[in-house]
Image 1 (cartoon, one colour):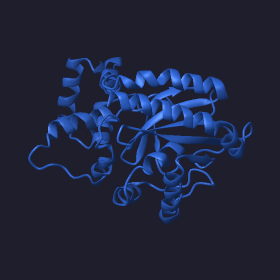
Image 2 (tube, helix red, strand yellow):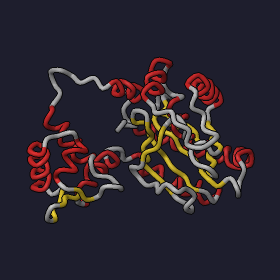
Image 3 (cartoon, helix red, strand yellow):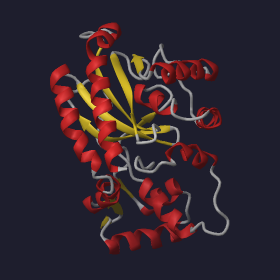
Image 4 (cartoon, helix red, strand yellow):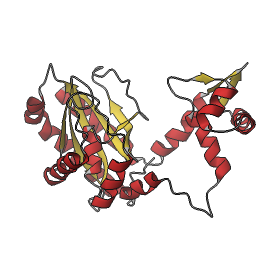
Amino acid sequence: MANPADPALPDAPAAISGEKPSDSYVQSFARGLSVIRAFDASHPAQTLTEIAQASGLTRAGARRILLTLVGLGYVRNDGRLFRLTPKILDLGFAYLTSMPFWNLAEPVMESLSQSVHESCSISVLDGTEIVYVLRVPARKIMTINLSIGSRLPAYCSSMGRVLLSGLNAEELDAVLQASDLQPRTRRTVTDPARLKTLIADIRARGWAQNDQELEEGLVSLAAPIRNRSGQVIAAINISGQANRTSAQEMVDQFLPPLQEAAEKISAMVGLRT
């Protein structure tokens, strides 16, 4: 996951190429992470065989890693089934707690959400996806259950496009080439050339709008959060329902407070980085 406090954040697309350092790549550690990633909402509990298949490991290799994770308390073994334990959250929260200035952003987000009566989120770019690092939900507006750690495609989300606007041309090409540009709705833009044009427009005006490209009925606005040197390190958005607030009404009513919140958080980040 990208580190918002790291000024080298725009180099994230380098990881997309899949290149592995020949002299420093620890294969056993990578295999352990592949076992952890084998668990998800659709597969919370799995057998050894299922985990081996999902992680691309042999049964013997997967078994050694699983028993290590069991010994460390990150995995529980219930008969034939293995499942993650709450201790695995320590790994994700280590990322959040390593950046204490995000705690300062929460009051700003809560104030924004209360003033517009819509959900507010902050995300960072990780390869071809955005990862939610903070969220203040106003009400359930999506069929997707979003929380801290949730991921969405960058190319078709408002925050994703804001984050992509912070990349240079070469980095943007790498992300788009690695992305699975599938239409999420009938409105989703999937043509790389058109996406580059949209992202260039976002870079010029400083904010993004998404009108039901990610999910039918969902509209959102996003603005960049910048570090002291002006780099886009994260994005903040407001999301709502199209049947309650149109895309244009959202721009007219919510863009000024969204930009104000983004500027406040950017200023706080600037003091901490």
